[in-house]
Image (cartoon, rainbow, N blue to C red; front, side, top):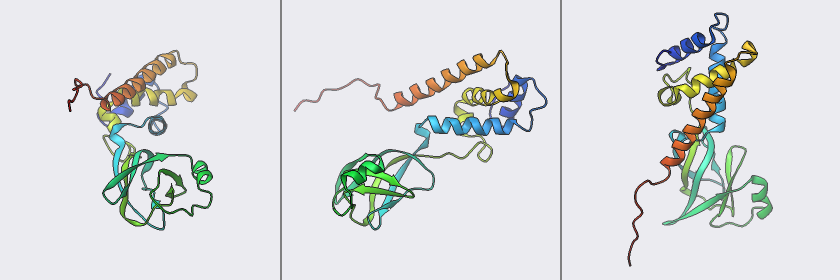
Length: 205
């Protein structure tokens, strides 16, 4: 197996593993579909992006690269008030006409805006937090984070996207096993990064 460190070397390794010379034009699509699937199923720390948004007319514009919210809080003077993410239908169920203005406790997304319950007071950069941002694909950002940090996951994910073309290949089960193992390893590594491994120190009054 060759070292995978770029879009070109990934394509070469996929072609070599498939041992097919008639799928060259399809390989970029295999990679695209594998990337899209990984971005949908995983929220990784490399996607975390700081958020600082103005509240205008009681709402805040969703960032263009928004994928999912990790956490958010609303600034009320010098106090940070954590916001609970709820489905938008629940937010409106709790605040049917959104007529109560004050410090919100809930946040949701409605089309291109974040909405709140209660209705947030307008002001500068009152909504802050961290969200997961959509990443640019490998074909435009070379090398991508996955090529640099988890090339085997992208390789086996791409090989699995070739299944409709190769049909009953005996290697499919092996690729699936390696892919599942790689995704699980990424999830574990990501979870561990959010947990302190240092010794807990008990404070005394």
